[in-house]
Image 1 (cartoon, rainbow, N blue to C red):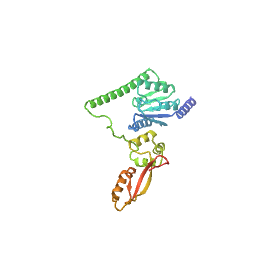
Image 2: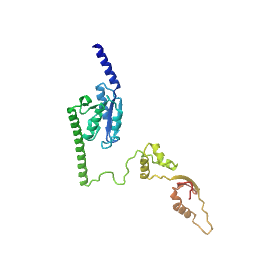
Image 3: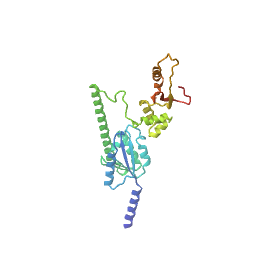
Image 4: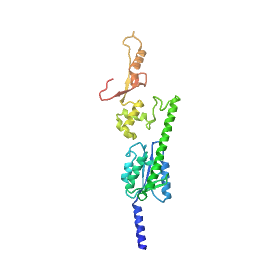
Length: 281
């Protein structure tokens, strides 16, 4: 009897060692903080003397595909006997159907699911009618709550429009960008001939982001070279006057279009854009 208990204890310890505990965190937008969910999962795990081995953190709405929400990754990486902890059941899906399907897949893979808010522990051993009813009920409550929030938001927007309030971003205003304040640096790269793809890599953004930023901030993709010009104006006759007026006319009609900087009475610095090796002034 003693040896049987000892063997059972060793088998139990071995099984626990092979199990992995996963924490799944999801928020709908980048503006939402994931820390509350992480703390809830860690607090629960510490209370149960468990250690979270792996985390999957997602910033995506439940409207997104399972691939975007990393549900496919979660299912493929978890093994039989693993434990999944979520702060609440609604993190797994938007609707009763979504949650029910995912729970069924996890249970078929012999994965235990722990939902902290609902105090639910769902496993293959507890897969009975009562568990299914509770899972469906909590999922339904979460879905109804989301629908009510959405309905209140729509009603609020409708009232605001009826009161004549302008909704959304003012026309012509620029949205915030992580590249704000870097216009001069980016223009410098463009002036040196660095293409948009490489500029995007430098700042760790996508090509579409850098392209939109360049267009909306009025940056130029043309290369620019500095030209230093010395301009002397002489009278062709002692009876003809007006050198000052002639210089002003040349400056106004010709040099100003090249971002003219006057260095002295006769010397200028010009910024001349070009797109290839053949340049004509």
